[in-house]
Length: 127
Image (cartoon, rainbow, N blue to C red):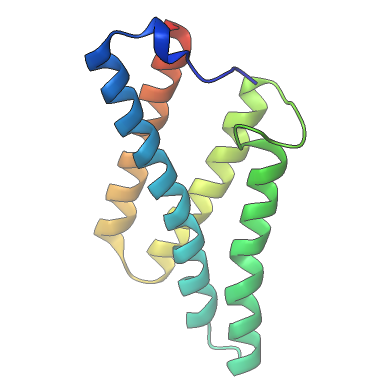
């Protein structure tokens, strides 16, 4: 896993943009948990089943993320594997939005994820 770019190696305006991008990445990651919980709770499988799925779906995403995709993940994996895990987790959230009938938010979420990930990769290679 590639380290986070060193702030001292980026010019002040680029560093500020990097920090904003990292903040957006964190918000997108929080959105995964919210969307998966919303999706789970909206399933028509009884109150207990919906509640269980509303807890289990984001928990599974968080565990997967924490093990392989987080900056301080438990296991160090190649960048391709890390990006694959991110694609699965972010993709699950986008598909959950589609299943909820939220086509435009799903599209905007997916676009934001792709742009944010591309910018993160750019900064990683720049430093």
